[in-house]
Image (cartoon, rainbow, N blue to C red; front, side, top):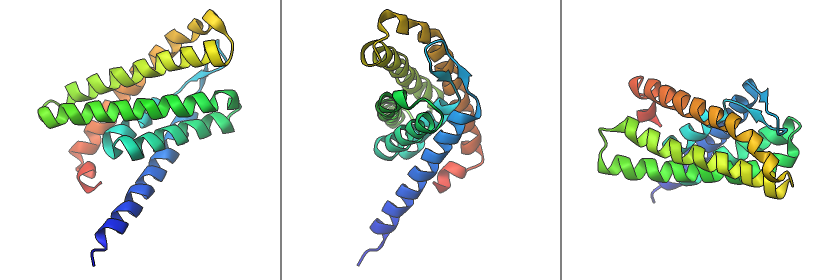
Length: 176
């Protein structure tokens, strides 16, 4: 009887839970309020790391749940459903693109990170604009959040690539 499969599932669930907690904490570490009742934060770094390290299923769950909990517990509950869907979609897209590019050319890590991160952050910018304009009823006024979301996306991508590089050099990723 092979016991490695149940242990692998538990290990993946534990890692996903840790990444959800990391996403929650990194989202709450720095919160700069935006004009549209949202905030710019460091959570996208953890969202991208979740995607690149855990894959689309566990990374998507960690990103969506951790980000949603940050909204629920910091006074932005009206954004929680949108945040869950947007961050989950970001992580799934980033993971799939990252893995596809890495399977073609494993030597070009930075290109894989940038391409997957740019798509993920575009999902975030468009997703929050759509959610605020349509679901929250803000109409075109929701466009005021676009510059802040772009800044958040750029910072999230740069910081995630830097953290990933440090983890790679330390060989921590090989153990995960």
